[in-house]
Length: 282
View 1 (cartoon, rainbow, N blue to C red):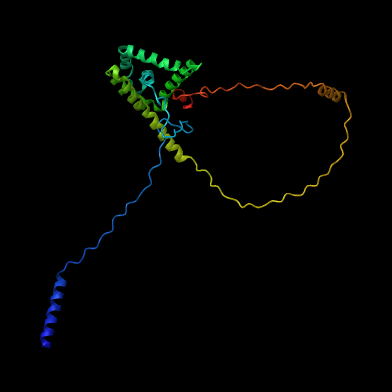
View 2 (tube, rainbow, N blue to C red; view 1 turned 120 degrees about the vertical axis):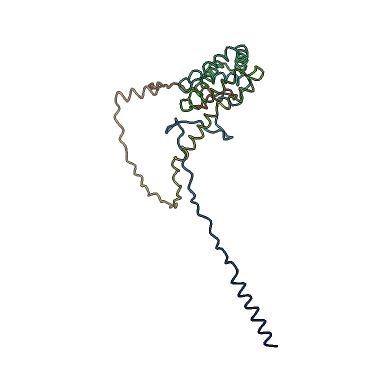
């Protein structure tokens, strides 16, 4: 009986050894390759930018100001005409292709443009501002200056070239909708430039020095001994007597005070979005 048990155990053990010899050894798990994580490259100065260049501050909603904020329908159409006029005047050295379709548009659609222009002027007249003509002229100049910025000219002209080839096919009833969408596209090169320039400037601006709190040590002021010395009364002279008489009689010698030119901010009393662009650009 014992021999039978030993034989069984030996057979079982041998079978286990034989099976273990046939098993494939586990493959070692390779660790994942180490990928070097590099920091993103620093932002680059946008083409046409320069150190110390001024850019408009961001608005409360994070956007940049342009001449086309909260435009009325009349303003949208006329601002589009202004933008394309700037392109016709300034894009010949940046690809061209604007003058001919622009002239064709303002000629073939002269009646509708004239209607929107007079409605636009009426909006300015109805503001009640006594100087509305001056403010209107200033506003138009700033619109032209905005679209004529040299740093964005190449990108602006590329967009304007595409817009002016389409506008001639726009029906009069669809002009307002087209103008609003077109102005967003025409403003994009300027907004993108401002964002790129601000990213570059903010990256390279030195951080403000850390504020180090100092230990407050009470300081005892030194004691001051006041010594009063008698002052001899100066002798009365003719000049002193003359001064005394002048003061007693109420006559004060005049003093020449330079008068500077009063600086007038044309937008100090603005009351609507149409006038707020006056301070938007440097």
